[in-house]
Image: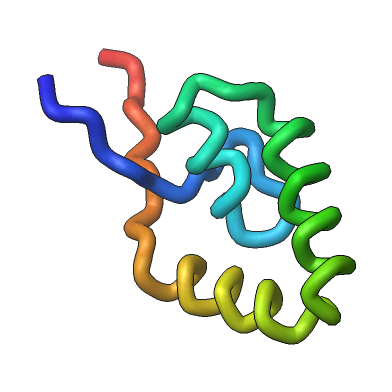
Length: 68
């Protein structure tokens, strides 16, 4: 099965981008969020905010599987 990047609906805080990246790379979502914040603070926040917004628009939403 092909591995795809999706925005997480179950574990999202804002748009689900960091949770989706964590799921894709099989890394703890908290670590992804901390790395994102650290890079944002080091680059004056604006470039990472723009990156996050673009990722939020481009990355498709994860389809929630319904039982049955």
